[in-house]
Length: 242
Image (cartoon, rainbow, N blue to C red; front, top):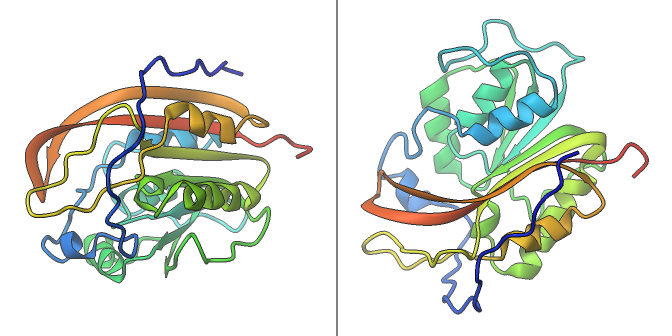
């Protein structure tokens, strides 16, 4: 077990207006055929490693052989266009790739074709009614901070935890309060920025495998000006008896 050290950031009150809509990025998904690119985020491999999946291949693409019925079951919630879902399927998981945005799933279908080992489903983590203890792994990459408020984030985290089998793993990536959010030009939608330590507290009864609070400066399609996010990456295992 790696002891998660509390964040040392100085975090003031979150005074940013939210501008919440439906939790998706449809306007941006419809402006480009591949908004987030094809390269998976490292958090997907962190989940794969924690689940002891075989090593990831060098190139991104559909798995050569669909995972068998006994393969670990993974939920990729807020999957977007599927870059992380495909990576996990490549490594041998059976993946339920779920997103609230039909446009994202349509982009993913065009990008990946019939990627074996993946079930694509339009669904909302807030209302999906996930079956308890049904997944060996749950991935939530860049989705929690786009919910409506702190209570909603807490509710979704609790639902994802409940959907995880004893001994299973959650892998989360989200913006935290360490930096204010700079929206793309012409857009005012603002995320829910919570402290890094707030997320750690949600997993107080789990074994934290890794927890980092880092800055990430980059550009991407639809947000070409350089911008910096404070990013929490958290990987935690549910106890066998919980």
